[in-house]
Length: 207
Image 1 (tube, rainbow, N blue to C red):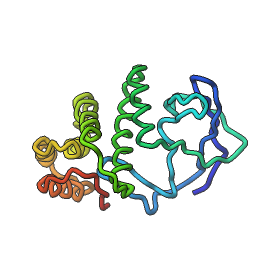
Image 2 (tube, helix red, strand yellow):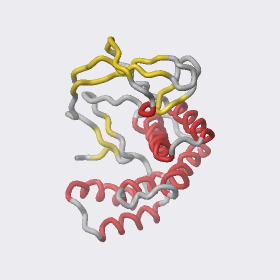
Image 3 (tube, rainbow, N blue to C red):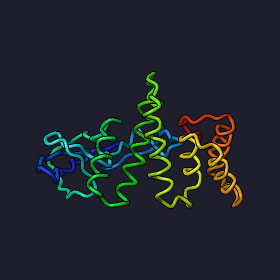
């Protein structure tokens, strides 16, 4: 991983400046790939899709801001906590941001939920209310709102995480009808095994 001069961006609400990490090069050696679509690559960290302004507390989509090159290096990625992703989701929903950006927010909200309750080995168990909130995001805000026909295994995974096991089985059967691609065969088998066991927890994929 080779750092570059940081990217200088400004909060679109108050103008507060922030210098974000920029890389000249990196690699995916030792990367983890998860069933909810998240990749964790120690040698290729990613700047958060959404930033929180430290001055005014507002959230904004990183890629929508004008970027200038700083004369300083930075390791700042602006990663958000699960609670912050919930706040960002509520803000953007009220503001009515670009639909493509919003689906990115929703998927990362689900991933942040999995980070907090499952991926980071947190012993905290989500409340029924918290789980229902995420299940509604998965079903109503992602699956029912966006065309995932080119991403059937991810669609099946989202049904599984929402505990809609019969729906998950239907999507897996639809995927298998067109032939199981070698690259995704293990993921398909792991999904099928877990849904048969009634397991709705995110898992690390074996590549």
